[in-house]
Structures are given as structure tokens and as C-alpha cells.
Amino acid sequence: MKMPNLGLGTFRLKDQPLRDSLLPGLDLGYRHIDTAQIYDNEAEVGQLMNESGVPRQDIYLTTKVWTSEFGPGKVIPSLELSLEKLRTDYLDLALIHWPSPKDEVPMAVYLEQLAEAKARGLTREIGVSNFTVAQLKEAVDILGPGAIAHQQVEIHPLLQNRKVVEFCQDQGIAITAYMPLAYGKVLSEPLLIEIGKRHGVSAAQVSLAWLLAQGMTVIPSSTKRENLAANLAALKVQLSPEEMAQIATLERGERCANPDFAPNWD
Image (cartoon, rainbow, N blue to C red; front, side, top):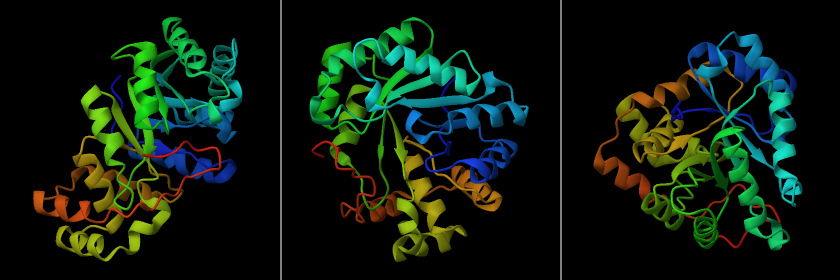
């Protein structure tokens, strides 16, 4: 199954908010769910997928391996536990959530285990998240060209991560843009509001459409059915080359996800 280019992000969603996102989302037609070990919601995601009645093979499912599980012999057992929680025998995509803080665990140790997980059929594709260009180069050197299928990274009009995007495009690594609405910051951006008025859509839909037009996957999250539907409708918004170029001028390095263990960003 090819990754649908608009998915349901589940960061910070648990209990009723998670239910209010996934069940209406799947009902509306979303077929891509993104979770992670550290979100502590994999068991609930698995339960809700089961409740939804949507066949497992129709859902593209991603989870991410947390940094505590990088040591020798740890990645595969952690993914087996994730599969148990998610009530499935395979993932569509398994990602390394963050590079090992301060390189405490050598990259080859955890990436080679991730490749082994794919070889064993635990996941159909593998990839990374929050890697810099230098780290992506190291990952490609370790596993070889073509092994890294995806890079998930924060991208939105206010943080465009161009160096990382260009490297991924050159290497044929697909990009998933997380926090594509910059925690709602894009909603008040005058240019996006103005472009949205021309198309009869919201600033949020313009931001999503801008990312989608560049061939990226987006995983916004929402717990309101009307917003879930509006995000899905962004697939139909066609921006002009001029509008695309205008939005590109909004870059100002506004990073939302920057924990103290983050790498030295490009």
C-alpha cells in the first residue's frame, strides 16, 4: 500500500480526544494513521482501528521507535511490543523517532536493527525522523541508497527546512511534514488568509495544499469532525505557481519541536 498523502497525526492525543480524531477521521475516508511509542497511545490506536471496521490492509500505519530502544537487541522487541499493542502483525512504516541524543548509541546499531525488522516482515518500509542532512548522509552510508524510504520532519510555511527537503528529494526519500499548521500559527498569517479567500478556503487548507503540492505527505491532527473534513478537502485546493512562490517567502525559522536532545539543525 502506498502512503496516502494526508494522514491523521496522533501526537498528544489519548482517551476521548484520540477517539474523537480517529473514528470520525476513518469514517470521513482517512486511511493513514501516524503514532509513536512515546505517545503512549498505540494500544488505543489499535483498539480504535479495530472498532472502526476499516480492514487493516486498507490503513497505512506508522509508528516510531523511541530513543530508549536503540541499544543492541532492543529495536526489534520494541517493535514486536508495538505490533501487539496495535493489534496487527505488520507496520507499513517504522521510523527512528529522533537520532540518538549525543550519539550515545551509534547510528549503525539501531539502523541495522531497523533494517532487520523489515527483513523479518515486521514493517514494509523503514525510515527516520528529525534527521539533519549530515545524519541522513550517514544513514544512507550505513544502509545503502534506497533503504531509507521516508524522513518525517517539521515543515510548514514558517519553517521550510529547505536543505533537508532538497537532500531528501535528491536521494528519493519521501517526506512527511509534521506540525504542518505550526500549532495553529499559520491560521493568523495574513498572506495565507488572503490566498485562502481567493480559493474560498481557510489559511490552514492553504498551508496543507502548499505542502501537498510539493509532493509531501502531511499529518495534521484534529479532534473536530469539521476540521478533519476541511483538512481532507485541502487535497482539492490548487495553488498557482505565483501563490506557491509567495508562500515560500514566509520562511522565518519558527520551529515548534525543539527538545533539548534535538540535533544541531541545518
